[in-house]
Length: 546
Image 1 (tube, rainbow, N blue to C red):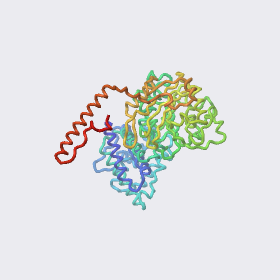
Image 2 (image 1 turned 120 degrees about the vertical axis):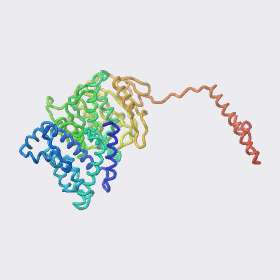
Image 3 (image 1 turned 60 degrees about the horizontal axis):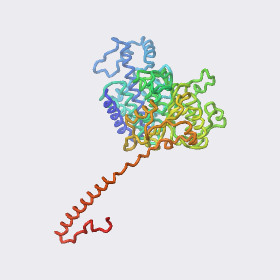
Image 4 (image 1 turned 60 degrees about the vertical axis):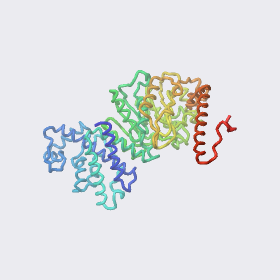
């Protein structure tokens, strides 16, 4: 399927969502729409694998039989079902019962010949608790099949679900059955729902263009970026992963470079977004054994996996990325000053947890790893506790690059943001500043970065090159003189030098303009004379014109 077709598929599904949601707000309807797309993906993938597994025994149904082929095989081979499902768990890592497959659900919706609502409930419950080798409890917890927004009576709810699924099935049928295209459609829909969610979008969505900058940075060799991309990242962490799009962007970039990630780790506090992230991983072909997303609070560090105190067992990551909530108000507990994540640098102020998020991720970075985090510009120059943390990070040689981005790139805020690149063992003894704030395309609602803008940022980081009014390597001595203030404008002037004026040429232009005015006045006076109106004084008689 071409990129154009994939975009069109996303648009078709978005139009369906827009038409069908009725009284339901976009955020609520998003959960239904994306869950059904997820079920379609799992089903298609499963049926392809089942056909391969059963080979010639995979049934061919007569035209008037509305069942899925697997339902017929289950009916004819009850004694072989357990072994078949065991094989499917081994090969595709999950099982879906024939009645819960998308084709069965879509047929129920089309014919309205059965209890769709209850079938969906059973199917979602099975996928959460029994389908995968590892359980995905609560995966559909935010999808309220009993919501009054679907209808007041049970029959109304059933009919509404039938209508939604029928239209989605019809929309999907217009396109290729390419399973991978559903992952792209899912990402497109997340972006569209984010666009309509305003400030709420910051909870779950990092624009793809910004994800592309971070993925371009962390997939380069961490110590020698100029040598190019790496083939392997053993592990990667996004501790505020939202819908997981940033992690998937990095995975996709590595794959394009012929590489792979050993395991993906994410953490997300919002339950709805946490479920989106888990679906998003599976929908993009990441097996359940290849990722772990945890639902919990990053700042209190309630994930037992990250609370390991034995240094030999403490998890460390090759790459850490994040787009945490900007200037989030938090309430650090009294004993947090002794927390291993913060004790060497101090606590971020209650008014803005930006540095608390940064220090959390940095603590779990490998010595040879790289971290890229999106933060508001305030972290570069605010005083007090933030200044002390910034100074310590700089003096210890951990801040590698500061990248200033244009304003209005996010759905959730119009403020300009920056990307900080950090390393525990960096080779250059200076800091690279990149001022990309003026390099963007203006859109109707948001500004956006073109592929060329993104590539220029990544290449400048990669080669650590200097470019007048765009990038500069600044010594630690100069940064110390500036009071460890990282405000980009202190080091890179974006003022454009005024063009030198050619006085002789300008005089000639003025003389030509004066002649044109005289000729135009003369013509105008001819018209006035014919109308019997007094003419205008000639320009050269105007005392104000010297």
